[in-house]
Image 1 (tube, helix red, strand yellow):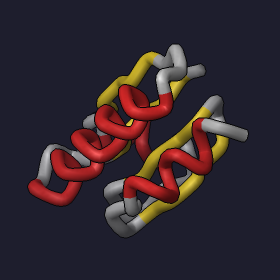
Image 2 (tube, one colour; image 1 turned 45 degrees about the horizontal axis):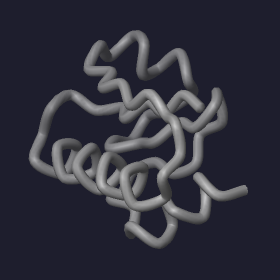
Image 3 (cartoon, one colour; image 1 turned 135 degrees about the vertical axis):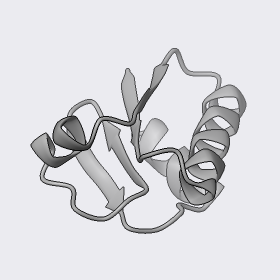
Length: 77
């Protein structure tokens, strides 16, 4: 599983990355979490509000911090 946290590095983006990392550990799934800060790369996903989370190429959330339970739901489907 490949997870990308999109954002320029603001506090909300860092919090999102932490939540995603904690959820991956809690779910016990094998996943690679990558932080994308390049604005053009972020726009390439069709994301214009950060933070955003992309799981296996699918944008799951944008413009807000996800709840840990939300992330767990994405990981276990």
